[in-house]
Image 1 (cartoon, helix red, strand yellow):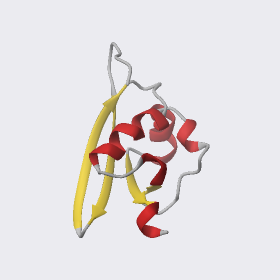
Image 2 (cartoon, one colour):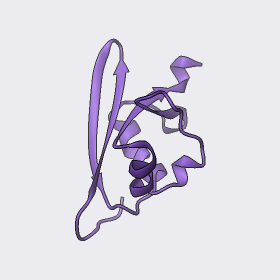
Image 3 (tube, rainbow, N blue to C red):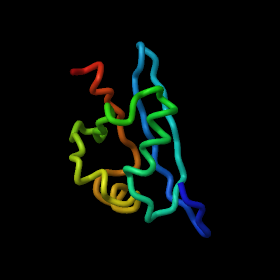
Length: 91
């Protein structure tokens, strides 16, 4: 991730892995792309990045195009909390 000056934007990633609820909070530059941030987040959850899908709290699954949006845009459209889905487990 690139360093930045000024106020960052917080986004929260949640997942249930092995029956345990986990949460990772990240503060990033508002213009960083979701796809850049998700690499680090996937590592925190021990998930292969290519197996990650994201959904909103209401259950809307993000599309590949959404991964090309900035964190600022993601928060504006979907809110500040996303659920991580490990597609390798779900199938």
